[in-house]
Amino acid sequence: MIPDGAWSRVAWAALWDAQSNTELVFGAGIVIAPSASVALLARQPIGTPIDSVLVIAAPATGVERELPGARAESRAIAGLYPASRLIERAEATPARLIQGAATADVVHVSSHAVDVSGYPQLSYLLLSGDGDLGKLFVRDLARVDLSRTRLVVLAACSTAGRTAVRGEGSVGVAWGFLTAGVRQVIATLQEIEDGPAQELFSSIHRRIAAGETPARALQMTQRELAAAGESPRLWAAVTLLGALH
Image (cartoon, rainbow, N blue to C red; front, top):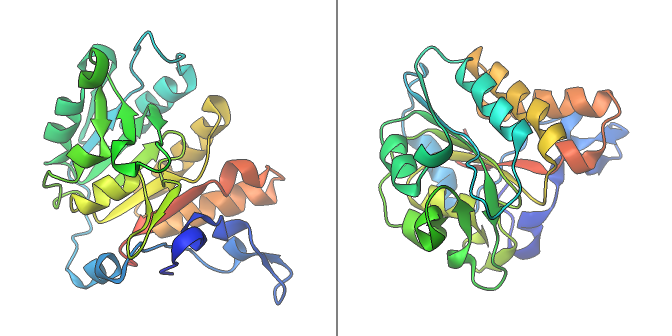
């Protein structure tokens, strides 16, 4: 789908399908393209093997609370892929993320994120470093070339963005990665809890490592959690943005 305005912030997976009498996620995998130009990236050829994976673990900043679940999640995810690099704590700087992502097929980031409503290009991922040096701002992301990267998974709060910009959909951290050339981004529509999110993101990666597409991996994980009676606040808060295939 290519929604406009506030429609880009809808948790589509949790919408009720009257025809099938169940949530929409049970009938379809859902990909949100913020614009037609991003959707058309699907016309570019894409290789199937995942040769390089970068995992950035939640840093200890001293400013925000620790995320023990996210750190355990990152280590487990790194272990799913034969060719993975895990960067943690003081080493998890914005520069290391950009440098590593430029040569990675898949990037996973477990950290804090701050969505700046009204000024979305000032939204950022909180990584390691003093003051602003530890913040990866959307405005800086949009200037780099990450066109090699096929998928970025953002295990952080509200990374899909909450500010709608005409012709661009919601602008936030995920938009920064898409503007940098990343093909698809798995992002969050709202705040997520550290513990419950651990299994959700690990499950998505297990399926991707086994050969599923990101869209299918997300759909199957959401279906599994929904069928188990988990709250939509957990599973429907995660969305796939970018190219439609």
